[in-house]
Length: 160
Image 1 (tube, rainbow, N blue to C red):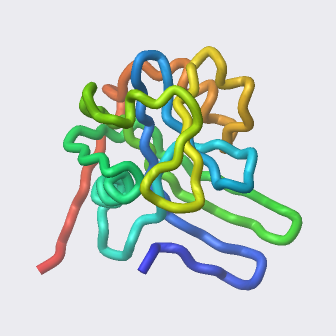
Image 2: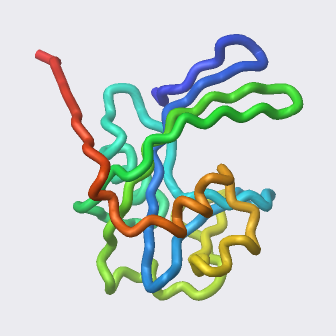
């Protein structure tokens, strides 16, 4: 069960884990087939699943990509209001290293992944302004992102 809930018909909350995947000056984005909005890949966290495990699961489901090295670099509280809904999202964004020989790095144009309903694309850092990327903070943050050495990530479990 995903960690998301509706407070009433017009308000909801969800916890999301997302991947910042860079390769040769490009960043990997995805969008729903019928949308102009691009965002970094990821998905909602399942109950009793760490955000790291969520991201590993999502990347395997979407790209058949096994990742072993990821580092938390952004924790984002995102508030979105549409015509009929208020959404609050807590997003954990990880910098993800992928193998340089993975088939994913060879795509030049838009492509489909393993999961239906999404289009993917590597976008050059210098061309980010040409796309509708959401949330909007992603573009300036990506431009100044060098590494994630300033973030500390701790997972505590008191489960017996």
